Image 1 (cartoon, protein in one colour):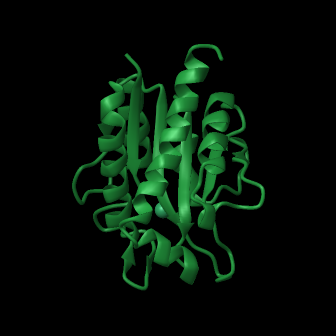
Image 2 (image 1 turned 30 degrees about the vertical axis):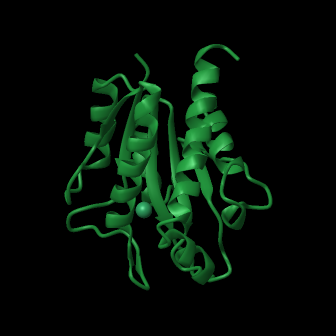
Image 3 (image 1 turned 90 degrees about the vertical axis):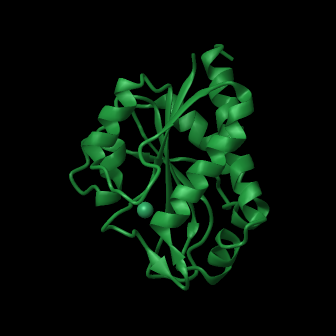
Amino acid sequence: MTCIVHVPGHGGADPGCVHGGLIEKDWTLAMALACEEAIKPWGIEQHLTRRGDINPTARAEAQFASEHKADLVLMHHVNTSENPAHDGLMTFALVIDPFGVEVGDAIARAAPARLLRRNPKTTLIHPMDQDWPRVFNCLKYHTCPAVLIEYGFATSFKDRAILMDPLSQHGLVAAVLAGVARMLELARGA
Ligand SMILES: [Zn+2]
């Protein structure tokens, strides 16, 4: 059976980014739960690395995913930047993970119009890069195909308004579903 593991970013003592009422650890958990709910009718096995306010280590999350033999790991995050003009939904995957890159591209391309970037492509992460921002540790340890989704920038006034709008969440979930559909196509060799 196809299996997806969701990693809601941050948790516990680590709130992630906090801007203008958006608390990343709560937002990512709500998003992962919404995705789980939307994917349920597809008959795919799903697990979350957390369902409460705890923060498993990146290694523990990777271990969890490999124990469940995940076909895909989806890491849910919100981006930040010192430049308030930076905006849009971004996906990240290891360059050695073509499956993750394809799924990430499908999610990036399906982003809601107001979060769609000019060049919606997965940003490739090189596993040997010593200058990894800490956020990419979660990708580094994974042995399963994995996509890190930064749904938008909490530091962008426009993005934050979209992220905090409950209706817009449906558009974000739809983007994830496009990635899951691509995953199923790839699994069939399409
Ligand atoms: Zn984050």
